[in-house]
Every structure is written in C-alpha cells, then in structure tokens.
Amino acid sequence: MMNLSSKSLPNCDPSPVPEPKKPVLDDLDGLGVGIPARLDVARSAAGRPDAGGRGPVSGGEKGLEAMPDRAGFDRKGTGHGMLNAGRFRNRWAVAGRHILMKLVSKLPGTRFKSRLIRRLFKVTMGEDVGLAYGVMLDPYDPSMISFGDNVIVGTESKFFVHTFMLNRQRVKPIRVGSNVQIGAFCVVAPGVTIGDGASIAPCTLISRNVAPGAVVTGNEMHIRMRK
Image 1 (spheres, rainbow, N blue to C red):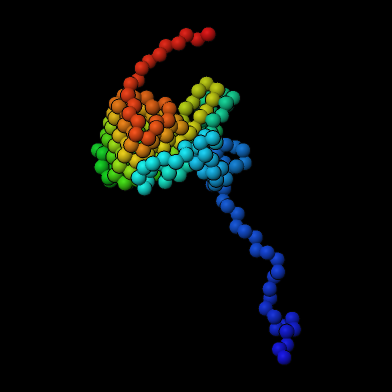
Image 2 (image 1 turned 90 degrees about the vertical axis):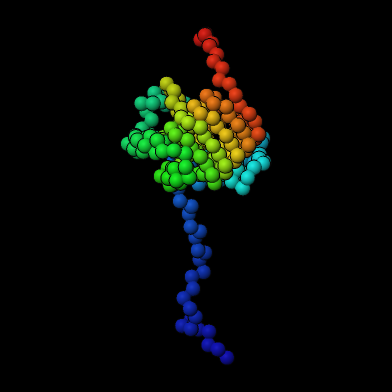
C-alpha cells in the first residue's frame, strides 16, 4: 500500500486562483468606468434598435457590423467648451496630431496614404479606402473614426468627432460603412453613422445618420430668430 503522508504529497493550495482583472485603459468620462467596461455595454446594445443600437446592417465583410464601437461623451455644465478642453485631452498631443494630419493630408489619395493614416492615427480602415487631397480627420481623436471597405472621400472633406459649445462638450465616434462615396468639401458631424452603399453629394453637411444605400444631397441654410 502506498504511503500518502503529507511529506509525499505535492504542495497544493486549495484556494481558488483569482481571475486576472481587465485593464482599464482610460477614464474618459471621469466616472470611474474605463473603456473596456463601456465597450461591453455599447456592444450589448448595438444590435438592439430599441436601445438605440444600429441593428442588422447589410454590407461587405468589413462593413458596419465588423467595426468596433467606441463610446464618447456628452457633458453639459463644463464651462467654456473650448478653453476647458484640456481637462479631457492633452492639448499638446492634439496639437501634434493636428500638425501631422495637415502634412499627411497633402498627399494624394493612395493606398500608401491610407496605410500611413491607419498606422499613425489608429484609424480603423478596411480595404481600398481612398482619402483625397486635403481630407481632414479630427486630430482631437482620429481613432474614433472608422471606415469599411471600398470607400472614396473627396477633396477637402472634414470629419469631426468633437463639438465645443459655450457650456457643453460633446465627443462621439464616426462610422463609415463599405462601398460609400463621399463627395468633395463635405463635413461629417460627431456621432454620425453612414450606412453601407450610401452616396453623399459634394458640399453636404452630414449631421444625421445615413441609411444604407441612401443618396444625400443639398446643404440648405435656415435662419431662425432667437426667442
């Protein structure tokens, strides 16, 4: 019979091994909730239209469904939105990205330029994304802008993920699907999603979500008097 004394047994600790904690990369909202936790919440709601999600969207392999969601923020009562922006993003880092983005934007629309932007600014891009001369991706946080496959963006178009007002700061991601054409001199506002197969006419201000396959034209100005 084998001797199972304590001397012959290996040193085993019956206590459970703790699970590794998920790293918190950044606390964008100052609420003690890091990016990974908010991403889980955003992804769980992304497929539910009743929760404000996008629901199922048709498109290529790297269309809207394949793009990562990334939470932004909308703060009211922050004081002067522009002058207090340094509380949420390092001003020197934004300035450095701005200078670098201006230089890169002078390149013609090539695959090399798209790869350079993807590498330098962490922009999510699919295959065959063409950004023409002068296209500007918001240096405040260009990593919050994503493109699907087979996209054309015309000359001098701008993508902004942030809006500063006198007493409010709003930062929201922009998502462009696959097989999308965006004309020259367009402006895409924060939080906009452009569906797969959509076409945007030149000089259009895109301030709302665009449905898949839609054609968007016009930039009509309206004047309203304050009450």
